[in-house]
Image (cartoon, rainbow, N blue to C red; front, side, top):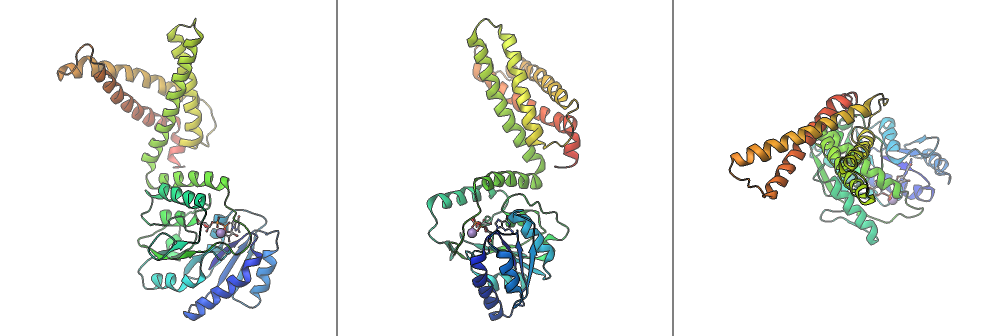
Length: 365
Ligand code: GDD
Ligand code: MN
């Protein structure tokens, strides 16, 4: 059992009692690994006391280093072949341990998740905003796993699932990380009743939610690298288009400015925006700037001319050839532009992946 703790002093006695009770009833030989981050309330000392009477290993870390990294340390320190992760605050019922462990022992599953959202499970009168946050977060994880409660912090796994796997400790959802990156072939959910914490308070704040968004995008990338990168690149491109139009419009409104010049300024500002976000977010570049920025500008500039060429090709040749284009058929011109923009985005994406940010792409960061 891996139990990360931060200020859980008031919960440990009951937790350890219920874990050992539940396990001995099912004939499970249990070791509890408590990973405490130097809790100011003295949880660490309390854990040491309990370790005198039970099979408990306490890991003391210097300070609050995060839930996921605590769990990862617990994985390393634990000696069993079946690992179970649970919160210390008694919201996860220790009585479910035997059911979870037996599904792994029989080979029915290599990961078992304690689930609130399947038949028989639930969450004790959660306030509306927490239910909502949980649902939205679950939706984001949908493309990664089909299970109903991927947000659960209560799960069991066979050790071989994480053999040789590098787990990224970003954010709170270490269970999701294990399911997506581990050698997993069968995930099964068992119903649990998620109780409100007995004492102390939750450590899940707004920052954790932002970190969660970062975490899911990283997981998307680990599963569908190119698709995820292209989607991010397109989102950035979308912001650039908005900025471009806003500046173009603003400059024209100021008057006295030739529209080609206005367009040129709008282009450079928007493209600089795109460069910054693609460097920081899409490609997470760790390389020094060098002339990355100019490479990016050059690519966009080529993209612009390719766009013009494609428009000519589509509007002046392809469409009349198919007999569709009349002089005033702006619908077909707009359609041509949509196709051209899509093709140019592929070109820009490919050129920036293979040239501007190629060292980062090679490292698959
Ligand atoms: N060592 C260590 N370091 N432990 C931590 C840290 C940390 O930085 N942050 C939290 N913990 C411990 C807490 O002491 C608790 O035992 C457990 O991790 C979960 O923290 P809570 O603060 O109780 O989280 P929660 O109730 O908001 O969230 C729980 O429920 C969610 C379900 O919606 C967690 O289980 C989530 O993983 C789960 O998704
Ligand atoms: Mn909790």
